[in-house]
Length: 378
Image (cartoon, rainbow, N blue to C red; front, side, top):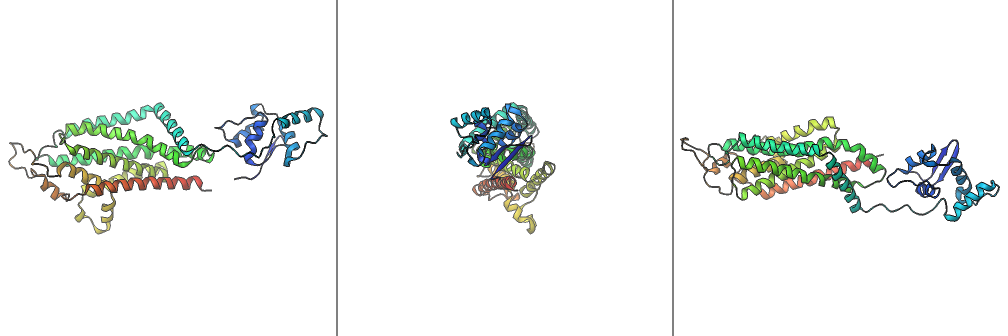
């Protein structure tokens, strides 16, 4: 940002030259700026006499070598000898280029290691989220126990599927929505000091959060799916796939909301948006949707995930469900009838997972673009 830097201390010039030569200049006077330190801050500390700085020596060094002039031999003998000894070792002001920054992959590895260390030190937050998934898994499993195999409990199972998806969406979105704005001040300062680039930072943050969220979702499913007596065949894998994909997609939207809005607004926008998208597919069918809102039905990742969950459980020509003897008539003993009433007979799982992945990529790209604009605006 500056072509030339002019620094004063006690009315004396202690540096006059290019900003790229500052670190080398101070190093040759035994004032070595640590790699993790901002050179501008370090120069200010030197100017107030910290780090054992000799202001008179700095002032005479600048006066003697300004614009690469030769030594003025009219200076006192002691000062002339001191300056000549420094010049014999190495030029005080060097035209050498600053050291090259670390490679992007190295920046990513270092940031990822730092985030792992932070996560280990703040493990209580991670532990609370995992315990919450375990507890809610048992609660849902108890409330909807054995509803997955009965024809008379198919509506209860329908609500369980909706609640499961809503839980995974909320737990994927809200933690990052609340935590990401808190890191913006640190990111702004460190990126301004050119400690790292935006790409490795964002990748390290995302790849720290994804594995843990996947573990939480799988833990909840492992408990509630078994207690609700859902089919233990290939449908389980489809169930896990769409719950995990929806949770990670909601997480990406949480990053975007956290990056674009203040935290006081983010805590309101994120849950309201999740509830709004959950209406489509569960509370209203496509042909009942007003024309003005049908486009939302088509782009809702929640609708795609929910319909895929219902179809994975009751589709693929599932045999007739169990009807208890005390029930005189089970209308939904044939799962196809239920799918027809819910308008889910023809569900394209490939298109739905493609939509979820597309929204996931789009939200992360939008988050990156938003952060880039914020960090580079003047």
